[in-house]
Image (cartoon, rainbow, N blue to C red; front, side):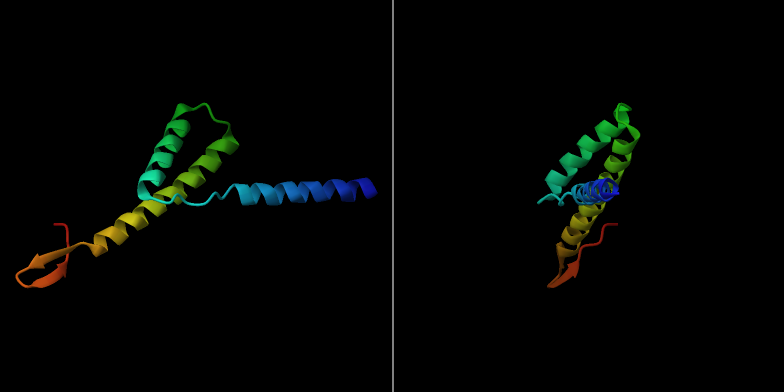
Length: 93
């Protein structure tokens, strides 16, 4: 019985490590996120990855996509257009 409790602890530790390692930090910049996202897409499209890696890649890609969209939205709200003497938010038409 001591064996099964000791073997369950490494399994739990491995599961915790997998959860921790499956969520790498987001890149420092939009450009770095875009580059990583492009690499992930190429890997996913290759059809050479095992199913578990496909799922992990897809999840990471979704994180990176949200990061990039958030960065673009933040920049867009910072862009101002001078109309006459008044600054107004830039609106793409």
